[in-house]
Amino acid sequence: MSDAAEPRPDLATLGTLEYDGASFGNGTRTLSVTINPVRNAADNAVSYLKYVFSFETRLGGGPTDEPVTQFRQRLMKPGKAFKFEDRGLGSSFSINVSGGSKDVMYGPRPSEVSFRPLGGGNGCVITWRVEVHKVDCSDGADELAIMDHGTTVSDEISESGHVTRKVTGYVRVPNRLIGDGTRLNDSPDYYRDQVIPPLVPETRRTFGPFTVNPARTQLDYSYTDSPTGRNIPPPGVVKITADQVVTSSVAGLSVWQGTIQAEYLMAANVTDVRVAVEHFFLKLVQSRVDALAKSLGGTSRSITPAGLTLREPDIFGPDLRAGFTFTFMFNRNLKNTLGTNGLWTPIPGSDWRKWATSLASSAFNPRGASGAVIDIGDDRVVTLCKPSSGRIGGTTGFVNELRNLPLGGFMSVQKLVDAAAPPPELETSWLYYQNEVVYEADTGSIISRVLPKSVLTAATDVLGKVEDAIGEAYDAIKSPGKYVLGAVGQDPAGGSAIGGVFNPGPGGNNRLDNVQSGDASRRVRPAEYVFLVGKAARAGHPVPRPTLSNIGGVEPVPADRLDRGEGFGQQVIFGAGSTPIYAARWRLRYYLPAGRKEGVAVPSNPIFDPPKS
Image (cartoon, rainbow, N blue to C red; front, top):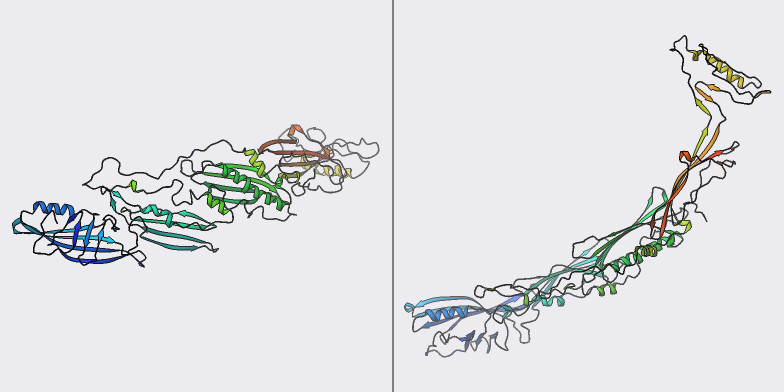
């Protein structure tokens, strides 16, 4: 090198060899130059050429301690300007010089300096190896551009034929140190937006990790495109998971319960859940309720709201989520078609283009809602020769906003429920109805057993002795005009009469005396009673008190006994929006006068036979 040793006068000048501004002397020999192509990951192109130079030079004419030290310190610095001109490799081979080509991999990279002393420390032979990475084209770019890009694509086909495509890729860029040698010239993350293609229509996209290597020369990324359904979320909502269940109640295929539940994931730049609340009630629920009402042959007033749940599934998480469950009831006469009960109904307002556009700056943006970027300002090369104090990293371009939920401006729950499912009509307002007929016959019999005055023995047991007399007394009942009064059996100890018969003949008193069969006595005529026992629930309309007007051709007589809890009671148990839910219970007693010719029929059920008023 010029500042380490003077050129030998007996050697002609052979071109130019310089590194970091210092020239090698004429006594420097080029031992070898090897050129290797560095291929891309797909192995279908050459990214750049790797040159490996090996030089030998001599130092002499005095002690070599200081020149060798200077030689080593200068030649081992990477990324400096390198000139190799008119030495058999073309007229000009310059790297990192002003206006010339740039090394694309932090080069030139000195890789070896070897030292062989000569003449007792007054001379030496030094061998130097250096690597240069150069693009081998006249019009190519060697900085601030993509050097290599490749992807791996995998398709997963579902049983129904839907295709989910996952793409994993990488992008490589040239890079070098600038300034004081601690700053980078480029970042592969700057090209993230260029390598992610536009979203395919009717798909949703999720991103895998974006990873930048420590050398800041390669970005690895992945994304997955999956098909959307026919129902598209509203703008500002990334994803909705929802389902609807319709099931019959214990009353069989007459009273039904439906449940619609959904969970909404809001985009990161959406600050409240209003759009989710309104979409759930005014789009999802209302469309399903209207479709159900149509299959019932009516309007949405055929359905009764029965329950509502609001959920915040992830209170402390970064995602803003909202969950809802809406329960409703309806009755369906089996005379009607079963229908779909609102299931499989398309959700109105589905527009993929509007939805995708609304998420272009958040969920479908390869940099997310914050515009995150791995910036060259965040990086600094640190070595022991250039130690750093304090913070050496940064967060340029990455801001994670805290989201506050404004609570004002929401529609009231009552209005939302009423909009989705208005109060039901009269004919479809029944939620439950049970009415049971209980028949009771009062024979007028009482059970009486006379206590003996002494211990019964075989000799004093009068019961066996009067069995024949009792039989004769009943024979008398069958003989008009015969009246038996008093003892048909007598307690041996002088007790009172224990039997009697009805006197229907002339001169009789037309009364029923004690008529006994064993221990049972009948003192009054038999009577028949019918009870109506039931309960019901109804939305928006009071439950009318049931009545019995005719039983077997006989008009029954109301005979409730309030002291025994008989009667009719009703209350409002809860409300569904502005719709009160009425619940009633009853136990109604009717006396049947004599003359019934037919059996007791089962009363009608308004669920199966809706009333008209």
